[in-house]
Each structure stands twice: as structure tokens, then as C-alpha cells.
Length: 143
Image (cartoon, rainbow, N blue to C red; front, side, top):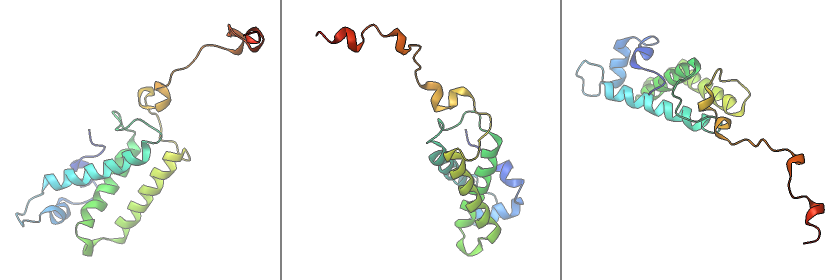
């Protein structure tokens, strides 16, 4: 499931701009496949950064991932038209990448992530202590 949707992109950009960024055929309509591709690329960048720390893709994505996905997807759409990349979009892209790096190192908390999506949730834990050892150095010295 993608972290953002076309509706999320429309909250930041008017549909007319999305049409301009995706309508290579001059059909006067939004090209949904290009938007989906931009979102997919954005989400893969997110997963590649956060996969070091979490199981990805997230089944229940924290809200910040939607914001990052939107910023990256919009950047991807503008990048298709390199002559029209606004500085604010470039800066939002850089900010998103910086945020992802900070999340991946633990400098910024991602927020509530279900236990099933945290790598530590799948690791086995032992209930044994040093006092539980059946064999010790002393008992094995004669062998």
C-alpha cells in the first residue's frame, strides 16, 4: 500500500499543475500512471532509508511517512520537467532526505510503529541466565 495518494498530492498542488507535470500527450488530463510511478519511486526511497531500522514496507505507516512520500513524489514529478523545478520543491526534497537519514539513525523518532514492524520484534529472546548453565568450565575441566 502506498504511503501517499493522488489526493494527498492534490492537497499541495492544484490539479492543473499535476496535469501539466504528467500530461506528456497533451490530452488535458491527469496521467494517473505517472503519478503512481512518482509515488512508487518516493516510497522506495523511504523504504531504502528506513529498511535499516524497520521492516518495510510499513503496513500501517506513521503520518510523517505520508508527508515525506508526498514531498518526494512531487519532486519526482517536477524532475521530469527539469526546467520547471521550483526551489521550494528542491528544498522540500532535501529536507525529506535529511529527515529519513535522521529517522534511520534514531536521531528522530518515527513515532508509534507496531511491534510487528520493528526488527527487534522478530528476534528470539533467551530466558536463560548464567546461573542456568548445566555445564560450566569447572565441570568440563576433566574432559
